[in-house]
Image (tube, rainbow, N blue to C red; front, side):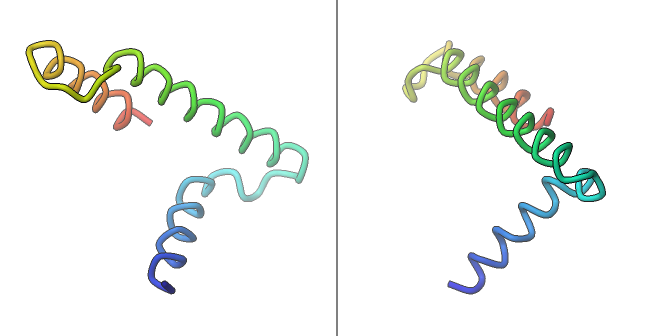
Amino acid sequence: MDEVVTARKESWNKWIKELKDLPMVELADAISSKIMDLLARRRMIGRIRPNKGGGANGAASTSTAEYLILKY
């Protein structure tokens, strides 16, 4: 269980690394913006790849979804 917590802490710290020195209000706003961007990307991926079935469209959608995930 400690490994999971440690991994989550490291992931969180990496995610907000460049934001840590901001004043409190700006920090909260920046984190909120990052979360909204993440949710928007997930919605876009859901629209690109609405089902998890394979097929020709599935292959193209996967590469697009992977691009969106890796881009950020």
